[in-house]
Length: 130
Image 1 (cartoon, rainbow, N blue to C red):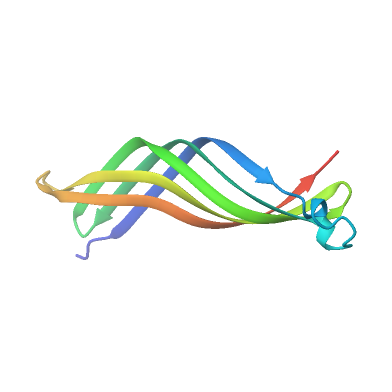
Image 2 (image 1 turned 180 degrees about the vertical axis):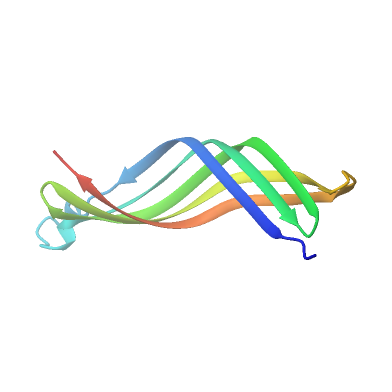
């Protein structure tokens, strides 16, 4: 019979982040729309708990690890009203490298699978200011 193919990756991160916001109204206080926009950037460092399981054509492997993680990003905030801000940002997150030992159904080693875990994210959000 045909062998199944599946892989599952899960990551939980814990990071300390720093974001710097620069309101454009400091540069152009009289511009009606521009003074509601604030570019921002920043990043963070921390740890990622990565879990990887795979079954590929009779070869399988599993690994759990804790790795160094970091992220960086840039974005724009727009003050919709005094108490509501709309955010849009791009960020890259690096979850580290992971090595998974593969074996066949009888337990015979079949080599290692090297993973370089990371992701590009486009994030939108609303902030309520009080």
